[in-house]
Image 1 (cartoon, rainbow, N blue to C red):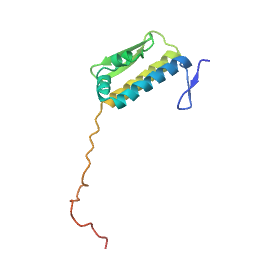
Image 2: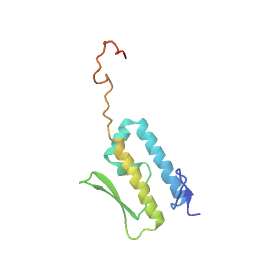
Image 3: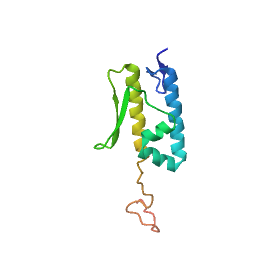
Amino acid sequence: MSEILGATGSSSPINPIRKKELDDKWKSIVAKAVTDEEFKKKLVKDPMAVIEEEGLKAVDQLKIQFDEVTKIHKVGIVGDGDDEVKAEAKWWTIRLKMIKEFGVELNRQVGNVAGFEEGTRAREII
């Protein structure tokens, strides 16, 4: 069996045992990042080191490097990768983008609506 049904309903060429390992460890990392602010900061600062500390490692055919210019991790395939390696490269690319977004602070201001002053009488429709 070389394919496993993914969450989107489509199949993945990643070996089912490997896919389960990737997904289970990823879920654990995300849960920890959501509940532990210090862990999340460490994860955002150096994702590959933290991911490896948590027991998740890319296959040998993948090379993951941080691009100083674009400030993103790039996943490359060493040599001529098969469909399974290409699918895992895509898996890693998506997760690394997600980690980058963990570090984005939402800048929402909650308060008065523009043009409305607190304490004034509500407008009436004539």
